[in-house]
Image (cartoon, rainbow, N blue to C red; front, side, top):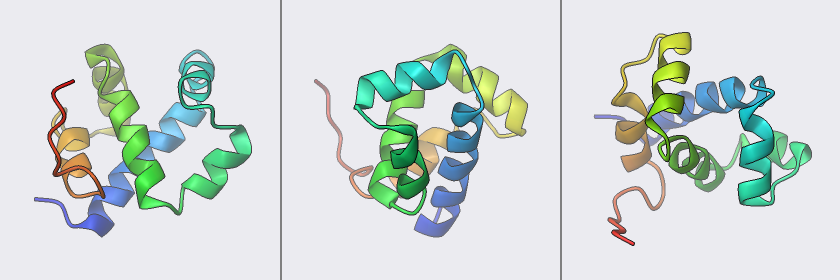
Length: 93
């Protein structure tokens, strides 16, 4: 079980991986409307970090690639998301 602080650390690691991914970063920026400056500011915002995890969890291949690269368990992003604001809410749509 993650605390909010440990969940933020997982999300920050994934954000760093995402920011370094020249293929996926533009997809994230386009999907969220965020700018690269927003990434820096969002790194301190638990809600933004939750959106990073939400985005990453949209595609199993992204999770596998990022978790393999970072040495994380494949369940870590989902478990971390549950500890961040809005993560306890289930949205089936």
